Amino acid sequence: MKTLLGAVTVAAFSLGLATEAMAEEWNVSLWGKRRAFTEHVEKLAELVSEKTGGAFTLNISYGGLSQNTENLDGISIGAFEMAQFCAGYHRDKNPSITVLELPFLGISSLDQEREISMALYDHPAVRNDLARWNATLLMPSPLPQYNFVGVGEAPRTLDDYKGMTVRATGGIGAAMEMIGAVPTSMSATEVRQALDSGVVKAVSFAPHAHMSFGTIETGAWWTTNLNPGTVNCPVVVNTDALDALSDEHREALLGSVDEALDHYIDYYNNETMAKWGPALEERAIEQITYSAEALATFQQAAAGPAATAWIGEMNDRGLPAQELYDFVIGMIGQ
Image: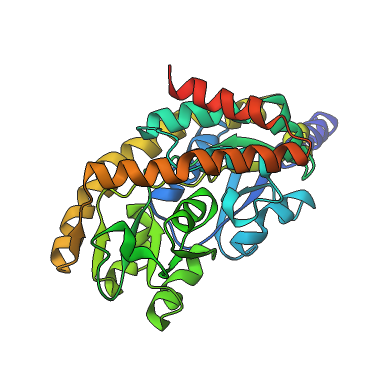
């Protein structure tokens, strides 16, 4: 009997060690605070934990692991297993996906941006580009068209942007430069101070970020339809960490991406946008709307030259730039 009990005890102890060994924890580097922009990561963590009975957990940190502009570097050295970043923060590090930040691409919805981003992320040239950082692209953070919140006299015509200092990254910055603005690139967490101190006179963001980072607490005006473009902000994982997962945990992670993105888009469309109009009205922020003729002139001045410049620069980097551009434009036109 003692022998039998001893065997059962050893077996139970061994099972406990095995269960503990199978437990997996990943650290996830985000920034700011929980908001619409991070809802898919929050949902992904919830789904992964549910599917694995708590054996695989994603520990989400808002700024505690890295600066947002250094998240890709952290992924490359395995400082954490998952992170979010925006391509325009360091376009030299991820040139292939900056094609999605070109101005006036014509992407019309979050669903379309999701579809095109996911397809582009699977392109061999893009996979190879991110592989230099030991990174695998997991999912996008689809965002609507950016517009400006600003201080001082409102720009009622496009000519009024001449000489104006604006926070605008990637292709949005390139577009604004075409109409005489002076773009500067800075991370989201730096923007409120820059606007308050007068370093910039206007800030380009999607609506959720204008609310989350407080620009509407300072701003006097908002452009309703300038729509120069958006930014591409993927969620990536460390490739070695992904490869090291058990089949069960890898399936729990990858198999939850679609549901996490469904949740994200529903949240953005139904929660965030429902709050945006009232937030502007409560603060008496003037809403500036440009004529169709003015916008057509802006698009003609910015879209073609920006695309041509991007293709030339990316060709020099050894990327199949025209192929990537045509791939994106072809999907938009479907």
